Length: 166
Image 1: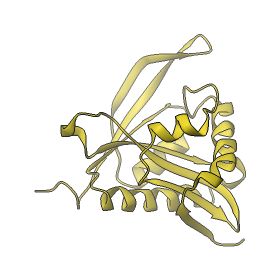
Image 2 (image 1 turned 120 degrees about the horizontal axis):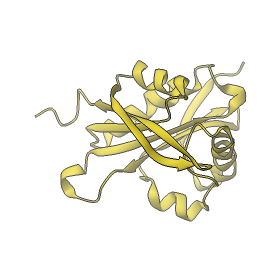
Image 3 (image 1 turned 60 degrees about the vertical axis):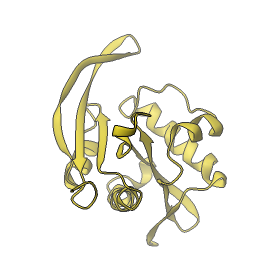
């Protein structure tokens, strides 16, 4: 298998990124989203400095991005993680490569805390986050409905050992 390489996400990657996002939505265990937004909508809600794609050859097989959790200045270094891998590439190290690169990019851009909210059924994503130092804070019970059913979300965070340590 060709090596997986990580690159900055470009506007031109959107069709493949959207397809991977759509595959995640279809699992019903990745997000409360029910459809992929337009590029402009997605782009306005994600930081421009921490958007990555994983490529196998020229094919995008995964993506990761950060969203600010608040516009308040006190939270300037806190961001929420989104990470998605095309199903054919799951459990092949793509998520680990993306997460390592995302953490590096986040710290290079002054992020001191990464947060994630993951459905409890998505055990692979929880394991991935824990592998990279995320700790489980707790479970937000019945936080939202999906298809008329209340869903819980596991809340995780990772505190940088390099940024915000003063």
